[in-house]
Image 1 (tube, rainbow, N blue to C red):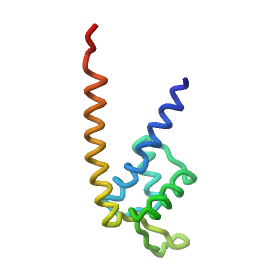
Image 2: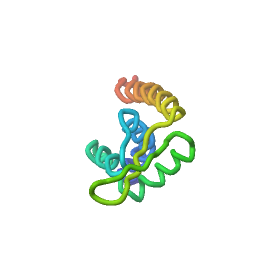
Image 3: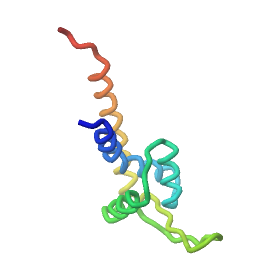
Image 4: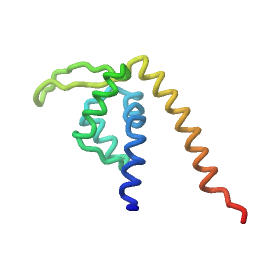
Length: 112
């Protein structure tokens, strides 16, 4: 088993939660989202991000608006819908519970 495959699957599993977390603090353009993910070392390319944004929008978790840009075509800015805010809050609780469970399992010495 290759470690890189496992790491990639772990990142994919948490990516939607991270996107919702980014949008929880402010509206963002896709390039801004990618930059924040890269800054956090969750490298994502546009080909991965756009389908996720579309899926989240189709699920009613995201909304978007077009804004004129001074340096090119209009930009699509994403934001959380009310449903998305509730969903993100639930995911946050689940993530905290999961993080605590993993910490307990991986740091508790086992008895022989």
